[in-house]
Image (cartoon, rainbow, N blue to C red; front, side):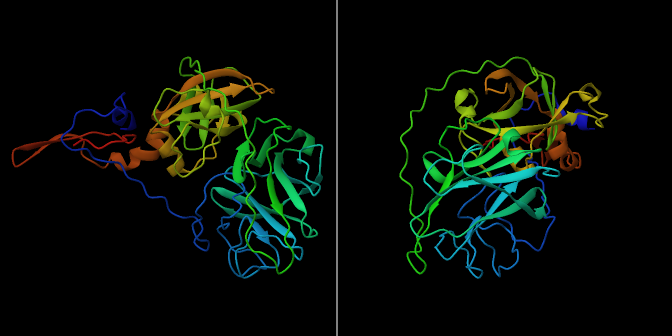
Length: 367
């Protein structure tokens, strides 16, 4: 039935009325409020979505440790900074590192004080970790960054940091330069002093003109929300590149997607995890490299309404391959259960015809 529903074409056809597929995402944890943020990151001024001890309200991702009854990202000389960082993929057996400096320099793998975070909370798909920075004297500028690793800090393969132009804007990267001046920052205020967090002065940057990306074939199979089978050139890292309007350029490689609804070209970092198995409807995917997206169903649906390309990169960040994604399987996984209960095709009522088609990735409704 699912094969019939695919119809081999996903564009909108001329219709008199269109049946829109719907899906309900049921919360897996009812004790935590639904957070305003989404994805992998450290969302400085957002509340974390649950209430850990000793707090009586949800703290912010950067939280003054003595402010247990109110969300507060301003750190005073009386506070340690309680920091939370979220991942929307499996972090089992991973080590999450925090590196910070208190002398104004940029923290990285070889500069700053490093410590490891502790796992704090799981609410699918979110895995939240917690770590703290000790209290500092008033006026101290504290810069910090997070790393994800399978072992040591030196071998970290993922980084969560601010950007040079906005120290509170979270970005998750699997390809970066240790000298790119990207980190989070805060200035310690005197105890009982101002409550407003100073806004960092933007650092001027030169933005290169986006160039074309050569896309060859369709060597990636998006099998379900979290799984892509890769049959292209093997790389040290992988990304899903997204353009809401098509015409993908290198602009998509410059900014990590910010969910729930990215409106400009961006990328999602993918995690290589063994090989694909257990997809009987896609036997040709078996044995291919398995890439994990870490996406929620809603976020995947949003990306599928634009252009999606999967790319591989070497350890230096050079793109090795870029290919279209075959999306019929993930469309089935997201929509087929709902669509197969509907009547598709032409029906008549009172002599008036109605045409219903399966168009889950439509962006505009026909008049």
